[in-house]
Image 1: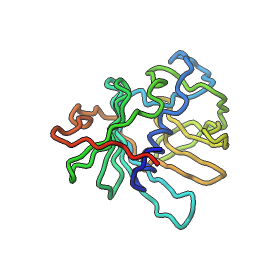
Image 2: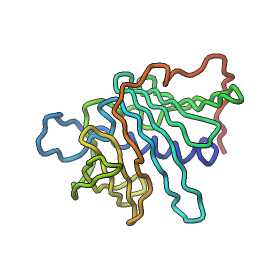
Image 3: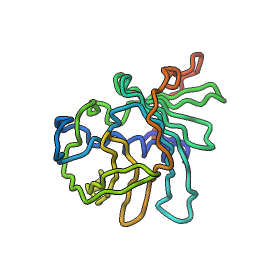
Length: 200
């Protein structure tokens, strides 16, 4: 398993959530979808609050930007020295530490399954509607990779707004802007030394 700093591990977790289970096909015009889009279908800039599984851990914030045309994502954890750029066309996730002028490149989680215009595969149950950060979203019940039941609120265009597990909010969007994202946001700086990911 690749080792990251504490904040980097949580940021990677949310990155995985954003692309989990994207394999099933459905029409964008489907009036009664059986599963949600779980990848944003448009460019977005979202700030998330991530709550710890245990009360002894600190709440953290992170910014996620997504380019639908480039199939690229950038995650910037607050108060962290690193940020992550995922290129789903190339299948890579690059952890960038600009202060130390280094980068680490690993395979992107779920990259083979990420396709635009596809809805999630698996068992999903629409349980209602909600509003998070003033944005309407649909509540979907499903199971995570550990087979634990989760309820996730997605907008109609695939933006994850909230994750609830065991009745506890784990991730919640604090703001959402559907704005075009410039190519420079997803450009890995040149001149960085590449480090190899550590494995136990």
